[in-house]
Image (cartoon, rainbow, N blue to C red; front, side, top):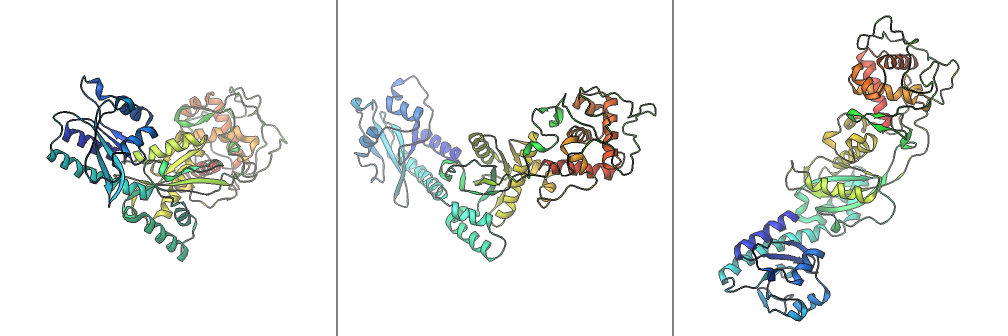
Length: 465
């Protein structure tokens, strides 16, 4: 939207051959034309302050309004007033829509000055600016109640009524191209208004169900991790405990061509784990559900309905999501697929929330992720919340086996390529073989079997959520 204003202001500057400045009716700067030339008097204190501070003083506002610009329907000539800091005269082109003044285009007076035909052409451009300002003012109205009702209502007559109310409030803009942004978890305190978020048609907060248990409970997301290639976390030197093998079938152990003399029981762990990978009979697992326990981080998320100019240009949504996420602190944001109209807002919200969950779970997707880019998380975020761990992998997800779970995830992220995985983990290949054999004994899964690998990979990624 701001780009549209700039283009229109540049069009007026080109028509009249002088730099133009656009302010809203509160004298807040929206766009301005660049000043070319050597005449420094064109940058008088009033124009300079407006550009640098984005608004004019109340004294300047009173001075200009004294010439009847709030009631005028055509150009108004305002003389210079050096005592007020107005070193050059002005021509004011009121910006109106349906008889209501919404802003002003300011031109520096010059001689011989624009012709009547030029001013008429410029006023035609202000009509287009007025239509944009009216749309933005309507969109900037507080539609949080209507928007929240749509996002929280279950499918049925309540949802249909909420959607109809939102469509009515949005007016013609309801049929435009939109996407939905989710910023989560949104901190306590007052949410911003849609008027302050560029491109927003509506904005509200909604309940947000955070991960079950502390976010750092995931074996690959504990404190102290550092990022390695491919976005896979790594934590060298992590202390831990071993575990006795759990019942189940034992893997074949081919994985990248391990030789028969490379016995996992005799391999030396060179990662400096302080014994984390040594077998220890009778070692406690710390609970099979160790990383699903604990209360959820129930709170709220911020939902934003963002207008788009083209389906393949997400810049307005990316900009809004990035600024909101940065202002809110350690949060993430997700963006849904672009859609025309509001019929599928429920689906858009699910996509945006899923993308935000993926960005929180997988740092390489954040801090802002769009739904189209989150890969397997498009499916995993659709699973019902609170599912218990798969029986075969429950023990691996216990905090006591965090290092093993992390090793398995890196290995699977690297498509089972031992060299890549060992390099990403910063360990010797023998150490990697040893840990993977422990994973097989603990889970009963065969990491040479495609379906077993898929199951384990899905479980580890789901656990991040």
